[in-house]
Length: 187
Image 1 (spheres, rainbow, N blue to C red):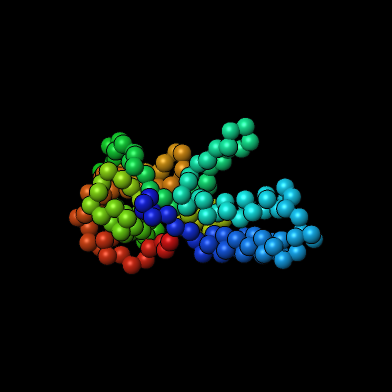
Image 2: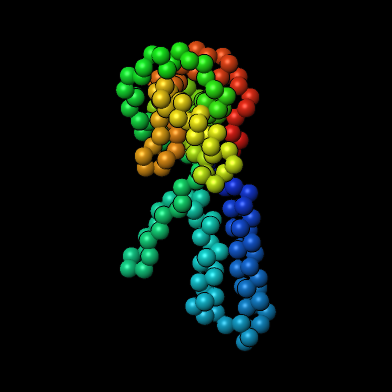
């Protein structure tokens, strides 16, 4: 995910639109029937709630001293400016075994979005994870574990998202099959 252009999922976008339309209707109704619809704390709270989704595009964390502090929720895909250090030496026998289709899918997904998001900038990594309730989760774990065992993928302990290691980038640079592999996770 590119940090410079935040984006929403379709659900997040429509939720923000619905909240904004409700707030706009309240303001219009207040203008038409000022004696009936009073601007009390509840109405002002609803208006603030309607503005919140839009503010998350600009602010990741905000604080109102003495009142509240909030941080936006991490999305399921992301990027990191701090790639993990290289993995320890892996057993050569593991690297000589043919890759499973699940591992190819994980590696091809990471490669495709890494190149789309950062081009040749290897100081940043595109990351993702699959939710445990997803039907693809068992196959994802199989491919992820194989890729981690080979030292090509690392998992961030903070976000639980996977990313290519320097070794993984080097391996895929020399493997046209994975670079052109069509079966990837779509985001």
